[in-house]
Image (cartoon, rainbow, N blue to C red; front, top):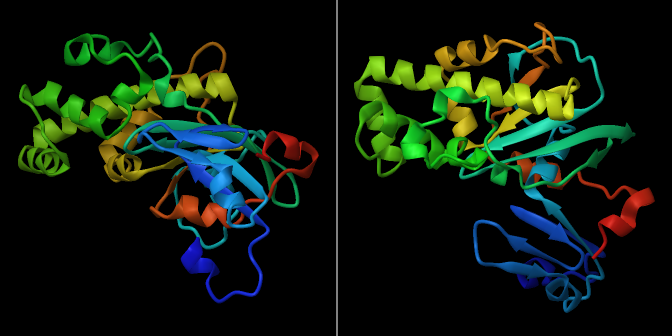
Length: 266
C-alpha cells in the first residue's frame, strides 16, 4: 500500500479485500492461514471505507468481464436468474449470485467446503478409511490425491507424483477421472437443488481446470442422472474459468450494492 501510494497526490478513498475466509464487519480471518486482516491497517493510511469479501464473490464479478476466457462445458439456454461459482483448488467453496441492475451483482459469501459431504455420494462412502467427511476432503487438491491413493493403494505425496502416476497408467487414470466425474456430478446435483443456479454454473480453480481437461471426466459428470425434484433434464449451463487471475480481475469490477452498503462496510 505504501509503495502504490508513493508519489500520488491523492489517496484511494476505498479499499476492497477478497480472501478465503468469513467476511466480518471490520476484519476478516483467513481459513487457510493464521492471519487476520483488519480495517485499521487501511484507516491508518487514510482509507476510511474498507470492504471485505469472500474470494468467490470476486469470481462472481469476473463473470461480468469481457476479457476473461471462459470454456463452455455444457451449453444450453439459461432458464433462471440465479447463478453459482464453484471453486475447486487448494480447497473448495462456492458463491451464489445474481444480477440486479446494470452489471451490479448480489453475491453471498460462504465457506461451503466445510459442509458435511452429502450422504448420497455413495461411491466414496468408505473412501480413504472413512476420513472423507467434509466436501473439501474430497473436492480439493488433497481430495483428488486421495482418490488416486485409493485407486493405486499407495501414498501420493504431491502434485508432481500424482501427475506421474496418472501419466504412467492409462487404465488407472481412466478409473480415477471416471470416479471423480461421477461424484462431482452428484455434488453438482445437490447444489442445483440447494441454489437452483439455472442462470449458469461457473467452475474455477487449479483442480477444476485439470479435471475438466479430461473428456472422460466431463462425460461422466454430464451423464449424472437427475432426481424427482430436478427431473431428467436437470443440468444448468456450465462454464469453466480458464485463467488463474480471474478473481483479481473480477475484484476490479466490484461495486458495493448501495442499498445494502451497511452489510459490507467495516
